Image (cartoon, rainbow, N blue to C red; front, side, top):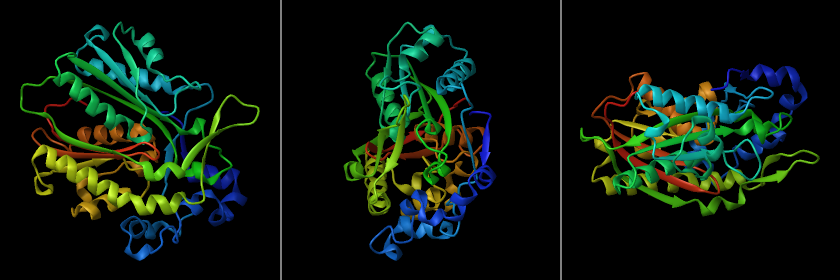
Length: 341
């Protein structure tokens, strides 16, 4: 993660007028009490209710790239760390799948740049599925390893929201930067990928979008007036469809799941997911208070937190879920092995 920690005090000090009028600005318009036609009957809006009095909507702090710092640096650092944990060298990697959301340069993902920095001589492919990118890449890597064509696949996922958000727009308040990496390979201990289910989030095509910034070589993230309503209306169905499909594919039920690790793009997403899945909230891993929304990096960040803090143990059955606007929603069931973190 970037070293620069930005708390809410940063915005209170630099943009006091914006904070004072926060309820009239973008973040409040996206996550508002009236987002859904009937908020009281909508699980997403019910979970959001406790945060509506907070202009930051539950965001506490986020990590932000410093001037001159690139997200590629963090992809490289995470990749080198996971190689070191396994005692592997770059030439042990047969394929790299890289989900940079967003990459350091317009139009081209970070895959080739990561391969260059690591000294990889095997393929490196860009995978883009917005905030679901890392889980989509995990499922792709598992299938490719299972096919026998690849032995070890490196997945690197990152998010550099600070490069496409405007400090003067309250939408930036719940966004952060970060990166994670993991390696998928064959195991002989009965652990690994058990089943999954992915759908396109076509209903969200009218939510978030990017537009060129005037006079700059960058893009800025914007949202439509109906974004909040669409997110509230679709979140529960997307989670149910993907989770039910993954459980069915794996031949298990929710009572067999020990831990749920999902991307947590909002302060209330963990409690929302727990409510929809019918499980206690403490069975859902949540790092949003520490890092905010770090997009495609959320899943590996939450997985690392769960593993390094003892929330997941060898033999546990884990349900993973990630949703991205204008991309995919995906769920996977895995049996956790002796995973080093």
